[in-house]
Length: 311
Image (cartoon, rainbow, N blue to C red; front, side, top):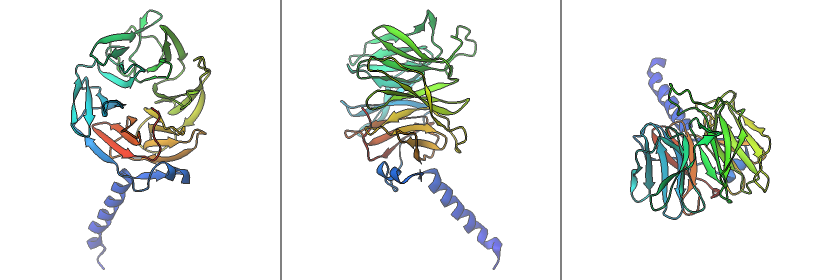
């Protein structure tokens, strides 16, 4: 048999296998089956963006907000209406979340602050300085059940000519007009999330090394010294530690090398959800909070999971 005639078929089969791997799921432990069906479909919802980030689901109105940082725009996506512009310019907003009063809380790169947009459209600054100096470029932000705002401040959005930097990249907590520096020893602090009982703060460090940290949080809000949760420096695949979310059972969903890595609360890597593009951030949504929305470079994606996300 002429082997040359089989080469096209050979490469076709390889192509199918690579395509399946690029959009499939990598199961590490059997408990991953309790989180995701083996045939769960990754759906592309919208595309044509420059670099998507910071998704958050509006439970009351049933839509998703997410940032396109270079486009200086926050977009809105809904199952009925598709994508539309929500806010532009956005001060190159990145991470988005809601507080207890329904205000949209935004981490602004070029604004170099945490800002707030009320339901009636009133815009204001939440916090913009540490010890009198402006932040670098706030990246991701969350709010706990008591109204405390946690955020990270790496230098990704800084202008190259900026000289008024803090000299470190911090993780902060802001509550009742008091700003507390949680950590200043991470090279590139990025995404963050709280455990369901809010006793643990998870923080992604995007490089040097690529890892996820965890910090104990007391009932009074005091944050203790951080410990390593999981190091992915040797994990294969494109992508760095970035966005983090947690489900109601305490499992951690984190974008990183290879896709969305799912960890148990005990720090076991259960499996990875793989996407056609490298994911940057994620959010749970829909009425049952069982749809995982993923911002990945130029596209917005979704996949159904079995455990609802923490609201």
